Length: 523
Image (cartoon, rainbow, N blue to C red; front, side):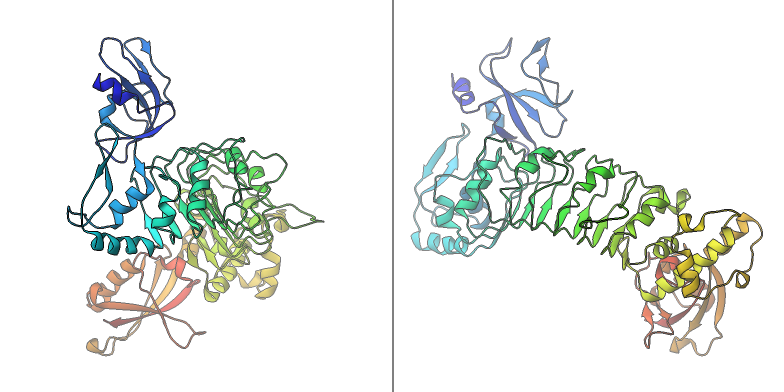
């Protein structure tokens, strides 16, 4: 009888978590008896996909789970239906409350019922309540929040919250967010990652004042995201990582709404076609687009534009961990009007271990880029890269090759740096070309006072050598331990040498060109 009474507290579609593991979240798919056992059982489809079965036990199907091993049947006492937002805040931010400093607080019984605990200590409670009133940012990660509680409860207790992290809670639909914003009018940023939020056309979606919304790992489709456009007219950052989005389903040819959106994060989805990305080109305020970790094979930019330029404000495009393998995609990036930061790492075109292009080629082909793969492109590196690129093309071009098509910037750069074909020595074999292109002539000057006057040493070193390995070479040459060295790059254009503090940075990424001078001093 007790088991049946507990089971009555759960219903289909309800979000729950394991009573033993706070991060084990799931959705109720069955409530009722199980053949061969007494009492009520709860069938749960777990988000992790790692459990016992698919909803079928001993030949009897009780529910259909989303995966072959994502379902299980458990007793109600092994599940938690969560608690209210205020209860979670009190637990998280009111320190530990003793029997002498709390009043009219609630605890959850094993049967998921509120049990009033009447305690004394009014002054101490008021002091801690004041802390909630002053709270501006709150983090309730995997805290079991499933409701807002009675109307007015949260607004009277913590009215000044502006940022709220609700990652991994038990929020089941968008109505929760709508009511949350009504209760907390100052709220501007909310993280709802790892919640399974139902968004349906019939749900009321009034405009909200949110500026940052995070919906990572929520199993959302773009169709559901599109429904939120009228609810989020002021949103500036929208994060949708790992939602398995493959298509940007919209009512028209382009994404509408999101007029103020500046940052859109679609990392780790299942996007393949750049045509889907072009649906975002109408977002007039978009400055940063992250589509790393998808399966995009090509990037393009339209020619002969008569009306509004696509992606007019876009300044940062992150394309790491995709399948870009052609130069047309790289050259298309150079056509974006205001693009200054690009990430191409872990694409075939940029993976040197698999025949991809070295950094200097990418720098030279992307004329406006000031940050490549997270590293600043300094004026010295750009100049050296562009000169080296022109010489590389002159050395490797074939008779009849359409240079304007295969190397769009070649003629411009050749003229800019006044490089003639006669000034570039022809390499012998292909292997010698590759070896020569990869070596940098480095002159190392020891300026460590304790070592006295030592003649400079010149070596040809691979561009892939890191600063850390260069220190080991200096240790062998000058007998000063690597841990006691500090290296600097001497630049003619700069009155002060550039410190090389990142031991993992490669020489090719620093911007030596084909030669450079290193100063070694003692720490």
